[in-house]
Image (cartoon, rainbow, N blue to C red; front, top):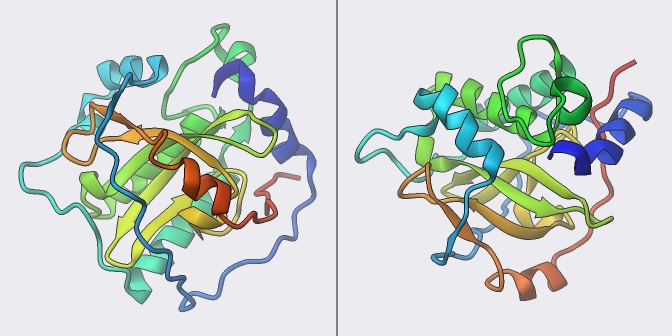
Length: 215
């Protein structure tokens, strides 16, 4: 996210392709993330993004909060994660736009973690996924870098689409410390995932990063 993710972004750019891909019909059983209700301030870049892309920050009244995790759903999630990771070259906002934080849907093929996340959300909305099930989250990576990912709430639990991984993974197999994410009831609002997730973060299995990279 902005300047603080430059190390992660260029890690993604520097590693070699050839990481494992998912079998289309092999789906995890992730389990649901614990509910969080305490309000949190929305990231500054997100507020600006919603002013420019208002349609991406709305949810139809009564829209479903989860999607059924079918073979087709799994294929779509895997496809969108891979295609967006492959279509954007990692570059931090300071270098790209001359500002510390700027969330956008890239048109020039460059972006940082939040740009990957909002682009994946846009593509899944276009594919018919309900907005309340698609929530951006802010986390800390293993090296304590702030990072943005897209979470997808399914009837089997929550999955994560991440520009640092080619595969879609369960939320509790990321090794992340979860900080905040969009509210289910209102995509313009955010909720804190601390201290609700403190115990889950301590107990979550640590998975190695499978990086989506460019050559």
